[in-house]
Image: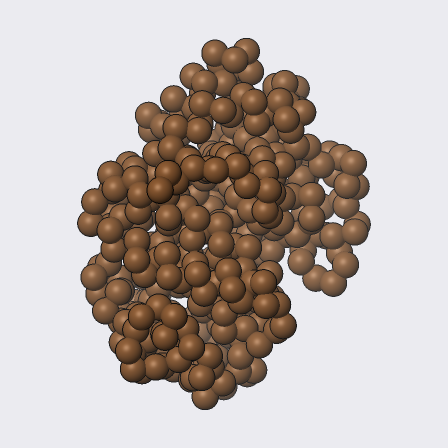
Length: 381
């Protein structure tokens, strides 16, 4: 089976090896003639980035790049990106990279034409309607990892540099107009990033599947996303050049981000404050947190997880699924506790408060309280 296709759900997606060559056509379709490529510091010097800039340059689209993006991007990164966008006279953004590059690139396009401050558009109620939708620049997304799925998301996660709180900024028009999903761009990912991003995709699917909200379409997508991770993440981890495994993991990442319209939960509610305070890798943080959250939620999700286990070919119902997660983490080199990532208990009261305020908390199958959330942090750390 040839792993290539043109999809229109949830946006226009050009999927397949080598399709980065179609980036100029994607820019034209989005209405860009002078794009700014936004990526992170780590990617800026890599061959895949130079190759992408060469493709743009050859098509007469220039090679403008902004790469001052931190692993957990802040509004300071955003201000610098907007300044570069305006100084270059750009008319759209190519968001290029993993979650950080994608999230910040989307926000540069979103905020460059707004007059209100970023935090006015946090994902609360109908705050997104405050934005001038006509001032949002077009976005083309090019993922280089298989994890966050931000390339098909309508929001970005930005860390407030003052409060060290991660905020979700949402607007429907932040969904990129075109996605180039080329698995060849992920071949050079180090094993640790393959593991962390892959477990992020798994966490998105698992939490969406476990969420009590009603959304059967997301439910089905989440279940198949978990299957792709189960079958192909170990292969991508063992052999980074396995293009079939890389392709299926790119699909799983997009599926996770599509599915979590149904809701996330305690994995992300815990992971967001830990990442904001200790600057840990988001996907790896999720991977550490999953088993304690499964334990916390067991009573509410046992039957549902048993259904998932059956579909995934895992024997033993909920217990078998739990053991599978432990075995997968061990095979991928994921540490057992957050302390191994540098997190401590010195800010636990702050993190509990931040977790309870996180929008993800509302999708957890068990209501998160101060007591059970503190106990969860202690178990994770």
